[in-house]
Length: 251
Image (cartoon, rainbow, N blue to C red; front, side, top):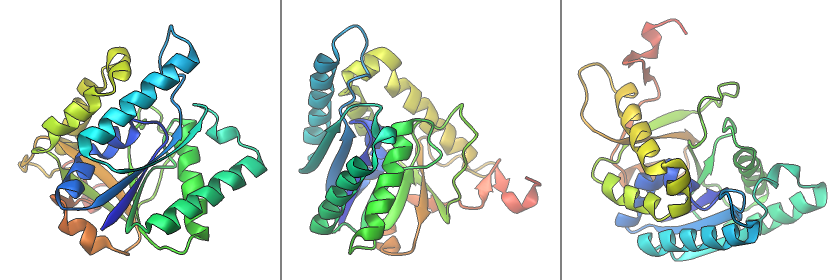
Protein backbone atom coordinates (compact mmCIF):
# COMPACT_ATOMS: atom_id res chain seq x y z
CA UNK A 1 0.00 0.00 0.00
CA UNK A 2 1.14 3.51 -0.81
CA UNK A 3 0.26 7.02 0.34
CA UNK A 4 1.27 10.47 -0.84
CA UNK A 5 1.48 13.25 1.74
CA UNK A 6 1.03 16.70 0.22
CA UNK A 7 3.09 19.18 2.27
CA UNK A 8 2.65 22.89 1.58
CA UNK A 9 5.74 23.35 3.80
CA UNK A 10 8.18 20.74 5.03
CA UNK A 11 6.60 20.24 8.47
CA UNK A 12 2.87 20.29 7.72
CA UNK A 13 2.28 16.57 7.30
CA UNK A 14 4.02 15.87 10.59
CA UNK A 15 1.98 18.54 12.37
CA UNK A 16 -1.39 17.40 11.05
CA UNK A 17 -0.96 13.66 10.51
CA UNK A 18 2.44 12.59 11.84
CA UNK A 19 1.07 9.90 14.15
CA UNK A 20 -1.08 8.49 11.37
CA UNK A 21 1.89 8.43 8.99
CA UNK A 22 3.94 6.59 11.63
CA UNK A 23 1.21 3.95 11.99
CA UNK A 24 1.09 3.44 8.22
CA UNK A 25 4.87 3.08 8.02
CA UNK A 26 4.81 0.58 10.88
CA UNK A 27 2.34 -1.46 8.85
CA UNK A 28 4.53 -1.58 5.77
CA UNK A 29 3.13 1.29 3.72
CA UNK A 30 5.33 3.17 1.26
CA UNK A 31 5.06 6.90 1.82
CA UNK A 32 5.92 9.70 -0.59
CA UNK A 33 6.25 13.31 0.50
CA UNK A 34 5.47 16.03 -2.03
CA UNK A 35 6.62 19.44 -0.82
CA UNK A 36 5.16 22.50 -2.50
CA UNK A 37 7.11 25.50 -1.13
CA UNK A 38 10.57 26.24 0.26
CA UNK A 39 9.47 27.72 3.61
CA UNK A 40 11.90 30.63 3.19
CA UNK A 41 9.70 33.10 5.05
CA UNK A 42 9.34 30.91 8.11
CA UNK A 43 12.49 32.12 9.88
CA UNK A 44 13.21 35.68 10.96
CA UNK A 45 16.46 37.64 11.11
CA UNK A 46 18.30 35.72 8.38
CA UNK A 47 18.20 35.89 4.60
CA UNK A 48 15.47 34.06 2.76
CA UNK A 49 18.07 31.87 1.02
CA UNK A 50 19.60 30.85 4.36
CA UNK A 51 16.11 30.06 5.67
CA UNK A 52 15.33 28.01 2.57
CA UNK A 53 18.45 25.88 3.08
CA UNK A 54 17.78 25.38 6.79
CA UNK A 55 14.20 24.32 6.25
CA UNK A 56 15.15 21.92 3.45
CA UNK A 57 17.66 20.25 5.78
CA UNK A 58 15.03 20.03 8.53
CA UNK A 59 12.60 18.35 6.15
CA UNK A 60 15.35 15.99 5.03
CA UNK A 61 16.05 15.08 8.66
CA UNK A 62 12.39 14.22 9.19
CA UNK A 63 12.29 11.98 6.12
CA UNK A 64 15.42 10.14 7.25
CA UNK A 65 14.02 9.79 10.77
CA UNK A 66 10.80 8.22 9.44
CA UNK A 67 12.53 6.37 6.60
CA UNK A 68 10.38 8.09 3.96
CA UNK A 69 12.22 7.16 0.77
CA UNK A 70 10.12 8.88 -1.89
CA UNK A 71 10.21 12.66 -2.23
CA UNK A 72 9.53 15.42 -4.72
CA UNK A 73 10.08 19.12 -4.05
CA UNK A 74 8.44 21.82 -6.16
CA UNK A 75 10.62 24.29 -4.22
CA UNK A 76 8.36 27.23 -4.96
CA UNK A 77 8.66 30.43 -2.95
CA UNK A 78 6.88 30.28 0.37
CA UNK A 79 3.60 32.20 0.26
CA UNK A 80 3.21 32.29 -3.52
CA UNK A 81 1.10 29.22 -4.33
CA UNK A 82 -2.13 31.14 -4.31
CA UNK A 83 -0.86 33.70 -6.84
CA UNK A 84 0.30 31.40 -9.65
CA UNK A 85 -0.77 32.50 -13.11
CA UNK A 86 -2.62 30.07 -15.38
CA UNK A 87 0.49 28.74 -17.10
CA UNK A 88 2.34 28.20 -13.81
CA UNK A 89 -0.68 26.48 -12.31
CA UNK A 90 -0.98 24.22 -15.35
CA UNK A 91 2.69 23.27 -15.08
CA UNK A 92 2.35 22.36 -11.40
CA UNK A 93 -0.85 20.37 -11.97
CA UNK A 94 0.65 18.46 -14.91
CA UNK A 95 3.69 17.53 -12.83
CA UNK A 96 1.45 16.44 -9.97
CA UNK A 97 -0.52 14.25 -12.37
CA UNK A 98 2.73 12.64 -13.49
CA UNK A 99 3.85 12.06 -9.89
CA UNK A 100 0.51 10.58 -8.82
CA UNK A 101 0.20 8.31 -11.85
CA UNK A 102 3.78 7.04 -11.47
CA UNK A 103 3.61 6.40 -7.71
CA UNK A 104 0.00 5.14 -7.86
CA UNK A 105 -0.98 5.71 -4.21
CA UNK A 106 -4.08 4.26 -2.59
CA UNK A 107 -4.33 7.31 -0.28
CA UNK A 108 -3.52 11.00 -0.72
CA UNK A 109 -3.19 13.28 2.33
CA UNK A 110 -3.73 17.02 1.91
CA UNK A 111 -4.71 20.11 3.92
CA UNK A 112 -8.32 21.23 3.95
CA UNK A 113 -9.82 24.08 1.97
CA UNK A 114 -10.73 25.63 5.32
CA UNK A 115 -7.10 26.09 6.35
CA UNK A 116 -6.18 29.66 7.19
CA UNK A 117 -2.86 29.61 5.29
CA UNK A 118 -3.08 30.46 1.59
CA UNK A 119 -0.38 27.94 0.62
CA UNK A 120 -2.41 25.23 2.31
CA UNK A 121 -5.61 26.13 0.50
CA UNK A 122 -3.70 26.32 -2.78
CA UNK A 123 -2.21 22.86 -2.12
CA UNK A 124 -5.74 21.55 -1.61
CA UNK A 125 -6.88 23.11 -4.89
CA UNK A 126 -3.89 22.02 -6.98
CA UNK A 127 -4.00 18.47 -5.61
CA UNK A 128 -7.68 18.08 -6.41
CA UNK A 129 -7.19 19.45 -9.92
CA UNK A 130 -4.42 16.92 -10.48
CA UNK A 131 -6.52 14.07 -9.11
CA UNK A 132 -9.32 14.92 -11.53
CA UNK A 133 -6.88 14.57 -14.43
CA UNK A 134 -4.99 11.54 -13.14
CA UNK A 135 -5.71 7.89 -13.87
CA UNK A 136 -5.88 6.97 -10.16
CA UNK A 137 -8.77 7.12 -7.71
CA UNK A 138 -7.25 7.26 -4.23
CA UNK A 139 -8.91 7.83 -0.90
CA UNK A 140 -8.70 11.53 -0.01
CA UNK A 141 -7.59 12.21 3.56
CA UNK A 142 -7.60 15.74 4.97
CA UNK A 143 -5.48 16.93 7.89
CA UNK A 144 -5.63 20.08 10.04
CA UNK A 145 -2.84 22.61 10.63
CA UNK A 146 -3.82 26.30 10.76
CA UNK A 147 -7.42 25.79 11.80
CA UNK A 148 -7.78 28.33 14.61
CA UNK A 149 -8.72 31.09 15.26
CA UNK A 150 -9.88 31.47 11.66
CA UNK A 151 -13.41 30.05 11.54
CA UNK A 152 -14.86 31.59 8.39
CA UNK A 153 -14.21 28.57 6.18
CA UNK A 154 -15.90 25.21 6.66
CA UNK A 155 -15.24 21.91 4.89
CA UNK A 156 -17.89 19.22 4.75
CA UNK A 157 -16.42 15.75 5.16
CA UNK A 158 -18.12 12.46 4.40
CA UNK A 159 -16.43 10.82 7.37
CA UNK A 160 -14.36 12.00 10.34
CA UNK A 161 -11.82 9.69 11.97
CA UNK A 162 -10.19 9.95 15.37
CA UNK A 163 -6.75 8.34 15.16
CA UNK A 164 -5.39 7.26 18.55
CA UNK A 165 -1.71 8.25 18.42
CA UNK A 166 -1.01 7.84 22.14
CA UNK A 167 1.69 5.21 21.53
CA UNK A 168 3.05 7.17 18.58
CA UNK A 169 3.15 10.60 20.23
CA UNK A 170 6.79 10.30 21.47
CA UNK A 171 7.98 9.59 17.92
CA UNK A 172 5.77 12.32 16.46
CA UNK A 173 7.23 14.78 18.98
CA UNK A 174 10.76 13.82 17.93
CA UNK A 175 9.75 14.42 14.32
CA UNK A 176 8.42 17.87 15.21
CA UNK A 177 11.59 18.75 17.11
CA UNK A 178 13.66 18.06 13.98
CA UNK A 179 12.15 21.27 12.60
CA UNK A 180 14.28 23.25 15.03
CA UNK A 181 13.73 26.63 13.39
CA UNK A 182 9.99 26.31 13.89
CA UNK A 183 10.32 24.87 17.38
CA UNK A 184 12.49 27.83 18.41
CA UNK A 185 10.09 30.32 16.87
CA UNK A 186 6.67 28.84 17.58
CA UNK A 187 7.11 25.95 20.07
CA UNK A 188 5.26 23.60 17.74
CA UNK A 189 5.83 20.49 19.87
CA UNK A 190 4.01 22.10 22.80
CA UNK A 191 1.25 23.47 20.57
CA UNK A 192 0.61 20.15 18.83
CA UNK A 193 0.85 18.25 22.12
CA UNK A 194 -1.96 20.42 23.44
CA UNK A 195 -3.95 20.25 20.20
CA UNK A 196 -3.79 16.45 19.97
CA UNK A 197 -4.73 16.20 23.64
CA UNK A 198 -7.63 18.59 23.11
CA UNK A 199 -8.86 16.50 20.17
CA UNK A 200 -8.79 13.40 22.38
CA UNK A 201 -11.32 15.07 24.67
CA UNK A 202 -13.72 16.78 22.28
CA UNK A 203 -13.93 13.74 19.99
CA UNK A 204 -14.79 11.41 22.88
CA UNK A 205 -18.16 10.89 24.48
CA UNK A 206 -18.60 11.70 28.15
CA UNK A 207 -16.73 9.31 30.49
CA UNK A 208 -14.90 7.80 27.51
CA UNK A 209 -11.42 9.23 27.97
CA UNK A 210 -9.68 6.18 26.50
CA UNK A 211 -6.68 7.84 24.82
CA UNK A 212 -4.38 10.77 25.52
CA UNK A 213 -3.46 12.08 22.05
CA UNK A 214 -5.38 11.86 18.81
CA UNK A 215 -5.31 13.25 15.30
CA UNK A 216 -8.55 14.08 13.52
CA UNK A 217 -8.78 13.38 9.80
CA UNK A 218 -11.50 14.10 7.26
CA UNK A 219 -12.31 11.50 4.62
CA UNK A 220 -13.84 11.77 1.18
CA UNK A 221 -14.53 8.68 -0.90
CA UNK A 222 -14.71 4.96 -0.23
CA UNK A 223 -11.81 3.78 -2.39
CA UNK A 224 -9.21 1.83 -0.36
CA UNK A 225 -10.91 2.88 2.87
CA UNK A 226 -10.84 -0.58 4.46
CA UNK A 227 -7.14 -1.07 3.71
CA UNK A 228 -6.42 2.35 5.17
CA UNK A 229 -8.38 1.64 8.35
CA UNK A 230 -6.78 -1.77 8.79
CA UNK A 231 -3.44 -0.04 9.46
CA UNK A 232 -4.72 2.45 12.04
CA UNK A 233 -5.91 2.64 15.64
CA UNK A 234 -9.04 4.62 14.93
CA UNK A 235 -12.64 5.38 15.77
CA UNK A 236 -15.29 6.78 13.45
CA UNK A 237 -16.42 10.03 15.10
CA UNK A 238 -18.38 11.46 12.19
CA UNK A 239 -21.38 12.10 14.41
CA UNK A 240 -19.66 12.81 17.72
CA UNK A 241 -18.57 16.11 19.23
CA UNK A 242 -19.43 18.22 22.25
CA UNK A 243 -19.19 14.93 24.13
CA UNK A 244 -22.28 13.43 22.51
CA UNK A 245 -23.85 12.47 19.19
CA UNK A 246 -24.65 15.58 17.19
CA UNK A 247 -28.29 14.57 16.68
CA UNK A 248 -28.85 15.28 20.37
CA UNK A 249 -28.10 18.98 20.05
CA UNK A 250 -29.26 21.84 17.89
CA UNK A 251 -26.42 23.21 15.75
